[in-house]
Length: 135
Image 1 (tube, rainbow, N blue to C red):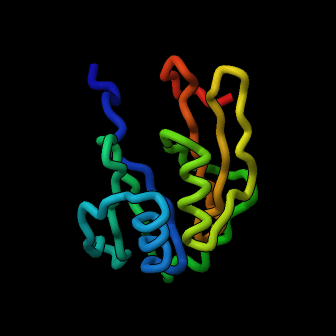
Image 2 (tube, rainbow, N blue to C red):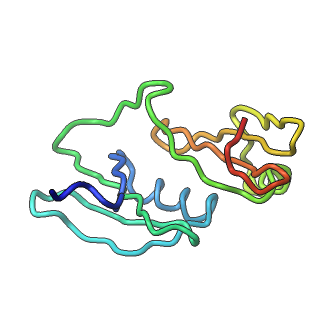
């Protein structure tokens, strides 16, 4: 039996493709892997985090109407070495955490930032043993 064996990418549809790509590249440090137009006319950009195989597909397809992301609908989670250092990086860009950081006794923690279009990004600092479980 052939079962799903590997997550390849996750798609987020956006209204402003270039603004969103800029955010993921400059704020999170993701790399643009490829860009093309789908057969139905959607503009697609694939991004990845340096230590990940899975891709994020950003899609702009105005024919399907404007994107309206509901609060707490979905989020992407990324590992960071230090929420404190990442917070300083955000401040240099004129940004701030939308929630947190929340740290626990073992040194691990999490925080959130808001991406364009209303998508939420979770940032997870590993605990002292290296586990990336958040809270």
